[in-house]
Image (cartoon, rainbow, N blue to C red; front, side):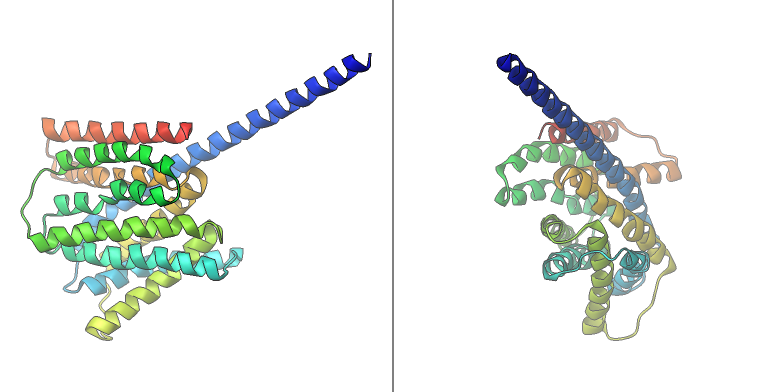
Length: 305
């Protein structure tokens, strides 16, 4: 009789544990899918910015950086009301994330647009999708599996954008932008150990604005010209898209949302095609298909990992 009671209690315990694990897995899957959706929406907002940057560009890339940063700063300040934890580690890694990517990464990208074809410069600047999984190997060897879908995505982007004219300096600056952004995402990964997404968004907005102003003053002086179109691009891309991306990483991890951001130049190209009423050729169509396949594969890998 005692044996039957112990067996019954043990069976009920195992059943309860299995049910709890199943519920946890479902919650984890829902969180992961939410992260994917947020990353896709962020990509749509980021797709608008290159067009606005180009049509609203002033004579100074630093003025454009300030215009862009202002949008992020304005929409970041309300997050202070949520009272996120802002300790030393949060400020260290949050500041590194903002300075490496949004400040210096964006600045050199804006310079590259002045010396290189926009399409190719945009593709090269997204080389961080390949660099990041390699850099993340210092944290875990499991990130290596994301390298080959990332390479697939880069091939697709190249096919979409085609070839264009430009100087070596312009394309080098695009590559430098990609390197800076790759390391900024690594800093973002570490920032979650010290604060929540709201803290990261707040630190990013403050640091981005201060960094842009200091860079402008140090190189060109105090005279600032704000571009309304670049400001709008920053408001949409950095003010809305940036926080959505930070939230997506909180829900789905760093690897897959970052790869999904490669949708941004694809969407930009689609908008350009629609606006110019051009037809897709076979090469571009193949590129679109390859990018989507690469992102789907990376998303499925993320589910298994």
